[in-house]
Image (tube, rainbow, N blue to C red; front, side, top):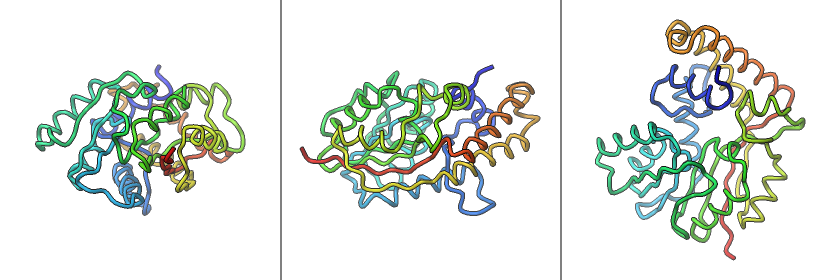
Length: 267
């Protein structure tokens, strides 16, 4: 039985098919998880001062390409996608061809996000959702991002951070699939400053994380017959138990979910 990040990936495929699902912004009680994902992206984009046609955008962990395609469609700027899943990249490539984005959207397949195979001093903006938590060497990640961005380029991302009480190793690996322990907000500040990034904006959105887990449980129960056929009853029951446990970890203040914007400092 797969747990952690891989298990959640298979669950999301069973629930929503080939759609990129991220922790979202639940505007009302009726907001669905796919709608919340789109609303969260819109909120992140609104925090960026200006996106022009000449803007070069990097999306890290681009999945099926939902975010990247939305950016190209709205702003007509160049977007490079870095992603480590060949099947997801094939879906993204089909979207590129369907919408004739070949001159705007480019897919870079890479096994990990620590060694970014991208040009130096190239990107104005970079966006990631729940990515850094799954990277072991965060110093290397931010060092690579610094090298890839132009002066005063901005990095906008959502991610998990350690709460007031640390997760146990079992909780971190088995429940969430993190590669090692989460870092705290102070540790993130040290890493980003060391790699010449200055914090521009930060907002704790753990309340939305809590809502997300509750909505996932509701969706599992709503689609249970279909999902059990794909994953088995035991696997589905295990996922429900895990999401309930995640909710308890939030209440215990063991984990936070935060939206950040950092800017590359001229050095």
